[in-house]
Length: 311
Image (cartoon, rainbow, N blue to C red; front, side, top):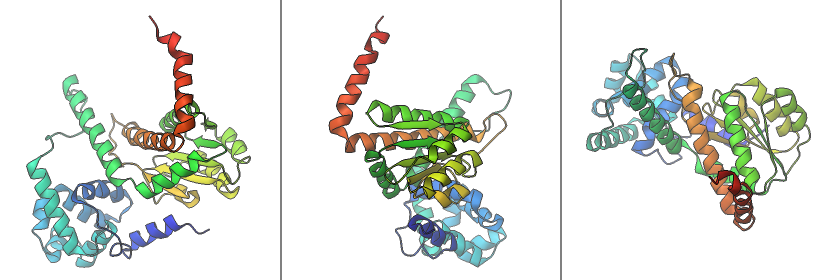
């Protein structure tokens, strides 16, 4: 199968796509490091972690200096720079200098999301709030707006939309479908893998199938997306791993922030925050495209439920 988005991602992984595109802005650099680090080799991870952890210090280093600092090679440093979207190390250094300047002028609070069992509840609130804010900022910075616009167009004109998700992602799937239903579109959420596949068999060109999976490798979500893909439906993946197996069957990939996992805060919790942001972006985009029919539908749904909210 040939998918332009996969070709772009593949070229980015081997470094050939970095020189041809626009390098990410300094603010987006940190988000891209956090998103791509889990899929890098260990040596490239050391480089990425170093530049994300100390952008000012790394900006002052030559390519040889950064290679020595991270115990890697100059070639690894250059490959990491290209994977992050820069033509070469010099461009990465300029971005690091810009990021360091931004942090210096408006430094984020010195807080981590490592919640301890004996943390006071006030600290828990502060840490979780900071983590949620970071997840939203990273997702927004890394979201491909061209892919988002294409997905919006497909949804706005779809005969029917099926959304697949299990666990926490299943809650996000339900949120998206109820939003679409309220503006008069036909949408179904499927968390049962058997029902998801049997419904996917009914899809065809002009329909849309959306898979929501933080890991990008959830079989119960990938299988119905594959069936929908083979039936000719337009397919969308909302995932924290754009290089995961789900991307094989996705026409459009919408990447969410890859959050750190801890014992008291599984990745599914903060990943849901990024997924909900993407869902809201999709919904608002579709509502804009279909405003003439969406606005009356929303009004009707509000009126139908109004009596339930009266005291």
